[in-house]
Image (tube, rainbow, N blue to C red; front, side, top):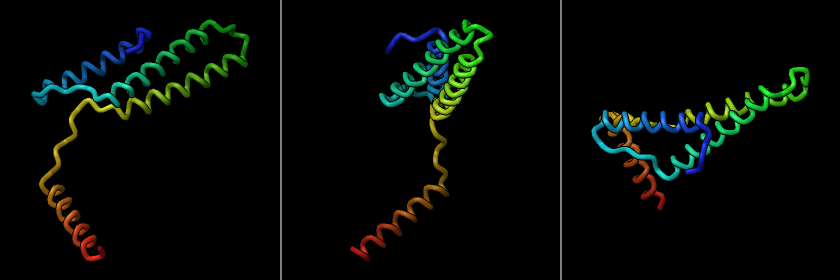
Length: 120
């Protein structure tokens, strides 16, 4: 994995800790898939950009309203992006399917198979 800012690395470590906690709760070893690892890298890279822009914002001349507004806008967009990306990260196993849902799924699949056989 790439080298990230301490802020991004702290976030990745926290997500790894959540996954480890979930592993302990379910009594099995959980790990990130390749796609999830790439997704986490994207999140960390976005956090890195936000950190770098935040530093530039803090070092911008307070009378330079034009650059302050540009940086502020970009920071808000990055905050939104990080929030959206984090919502798609799951550290818990999905809840097991209830018996009722499983029966309904089997019934629907049986109907679709019957309809397919009738038209085929």
